[in-house]
Amino acid sequence: MAANITWNTENVNLPDLDVRLMEKWLAEVARNHDRILGQLCYVFCDDETILKVNREFLNHDYYTDIITFDYSRRKLVSGDMYISLDTVASNAEGMGASYETELNRVIVHGLLHLCGINDKGEGEREIMEAHEDAALLALGKLKEEE
Image (cartoon, rainbow, N blue to C red):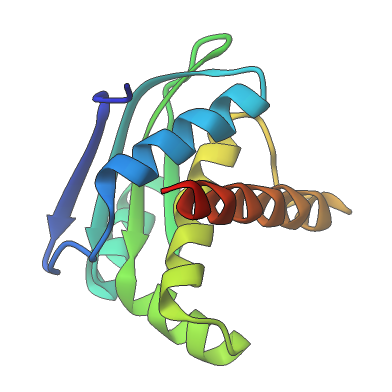
């Protein structure tokens, strides 16, 4: 199905993911946005690594949960996504969400960026959150079908 997704780590252990389910889900999310999955590379890392990436490539001097590098062409979505598991954990705690839910939200957030959904402009954050919520519901349905 979606064997073009790689799951890597830098300075952390790989989160406990059902990779087959995640790949099925991400392919469905892409289809729901009229996109086709190309090469996706997820790199799970710690806060220090994401800060280094943020400084080096974006000239930003702060921690974040995800940095997405977009290599998409037309409907074929491709990119590298760095996810700080430290920030995911602190965000989950701060929002009263489970770590798993927050991790899934961040994983799909990167794909949604590749599908053309932004979250920096006025009103865009609410649009992104609506797409994240819809994707998380779809993941729940896939889990029920298992």
